[in-house]
Length: 120
View 1: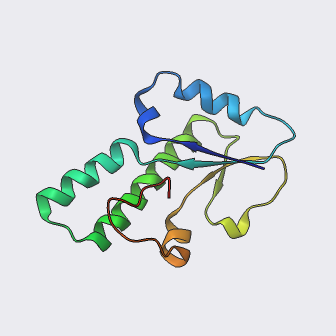
View 2: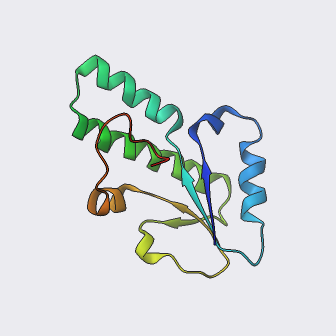
């Protein structure tokens, strides 16, 4: 199994579409793509400052930013399977993109601040 982080900084890269399609075309390997937050997380950072949002709410919004990036990855190539919880992960030679909201809300015990990122 391969776990691959597609950082949000790749959002504006013209090769993102090609990379996702190439990853989805890999045979005989289970791959889990972990999305970054990209411009969606940048907007959360701005809103957090503008509205003085507390860390718990900003963290939830940032996780939803990752979720939005995951939706984009699903849109780029429909062979990429939505993984709504790691509980549903099967080692079956498919490419998944993790939609983190459920797992982070129920299983994550990381600090809720801007030092905790999608890399965590």
